[in-house]
Length: 232
Length: 400
Image 1 (tube, rainbow over the protein chains, first blue to last red):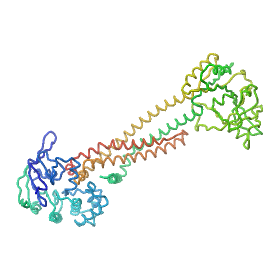
Image 2 (cartoon, one colour):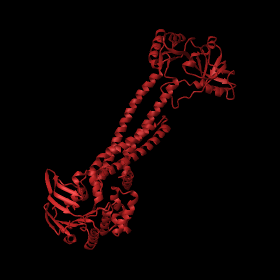
Image 3 (cartoon, rainbow over the protein chains, first blue to last red):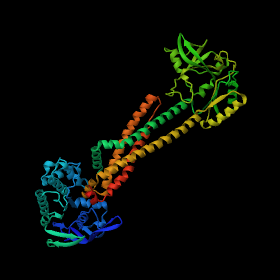
Image 4 (spheres, rainbow over the protein chains, first blue to last red):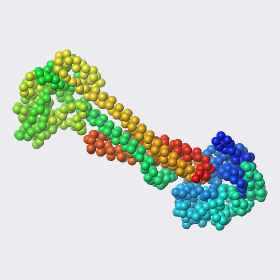
């Protein structure tokens, strides 16, 4: 069975001013359907770059990235955006809710860019809010939510297009340990439902909850533990 | 994204900053208002000129004697000048000599403010008069210097409010005339007198040329005007020159040649200059308005960098982001265009009421102003939208 996410010797270099900054140097990684992977590494090790490539927000400058059987290099911006919209849900450290919109509108936003008929948007948003236990906050503004609530709203937003992959970037980084625990078990639950979860974090405890742990250093893959990939 | 969703997003975002949105479109509002008001003044002037000249006829020429510089023996235009013109100038429809006197017209104590016009039957054709009842002057009337009169419509109405004027007698100055006909009323251009003096035929009383008493006129065959109508309006200028040369040869009298067609041409030239100036002002004010829009949109993009990053992460393509900002700038200028058109309409009404200038608005002009405003929105919104679309999503997300 082909992996859901497959990086083949992926490199990424940015031009900053006159020089070139290399963020990733030949990373090869395969993530199977339904896996949960934690990506760890010190600052500047290329974690964020890896996440933005996995999330189709950026493209590799070397190597190949094949997502669900599609080489992203072959897609134009529009097609790549569709794929991102359909296949990937993002959860960020600082929640990234749009402050002018209500919670329900924030959760709806990914549907604007997909093919779902507008009549179904609100119902789907409510279903996802219910799933994360935030239905009672649907008409509030993000500024009226606590950190834990805001992150749960963000998780609801990531779920609204029913993506196969969840990408989380330090999802508990801005939360105290109790609410962090809440979010972590929410993500665990989503993983157990069969979603593929890739988690970027500094937090060793959080990382241990994943079945597989990948370490990056200086843009290279340093270790890949517990890759008890499901037997092919 | 569907157009409805884009429109909804755009409206929401603009309504979120009502004051800012309003201020940012003021340039466009005033630009469009100025253009609409100015073009309505120009259009009004043009229509007035056309209707004024239309009432004279663009195929007509008038030679009008000017009072001599000194009080001495004024050697004005004479009857023989008219005859010479009729003989020499080719392709004429009619040549009519005209004499004028301000005389009170009265019947049974009813007094009408009238202009007595002494002329020949040819005047009817030269001035395109139509007779409502009875007849116009005849050759016999002129030859016999008969005391008969044809009344203009409003004179007839004033003197004979109850019934038929024909057959009745009218006192003109010291003499009595028999009414043989009444003219059809003619609509006159509204507004103030323009550059061309037009005779108000409604207020005229036409009598045979020799029957008009000029008091102590030293020149029994003197005339005030010679009215000419040519067959081909395109040749009116050439005919006017010929007529002028003919009269010059026989008469030393100063006179002026009035060719409505030439005046119309001149007006059109003036109009064209006015249009160019209006267009330049329009272009400048829309440019300024557009720069205002661009400025506010750039500020908006900078302020919403994170939002752009979020939307991109959630599946918006570059096109989606660009469309969102373009819709906003177009909505702004479209609103500015509508408000400006309304303001311009009110302005042109005020100009008409306060300054007394005739104004007219062509719907095409209004449409052009609105379309231009919309294009300004798209044109000046393009660069900010492009900037927003080309933000790197990860950088945009990290933007504080």
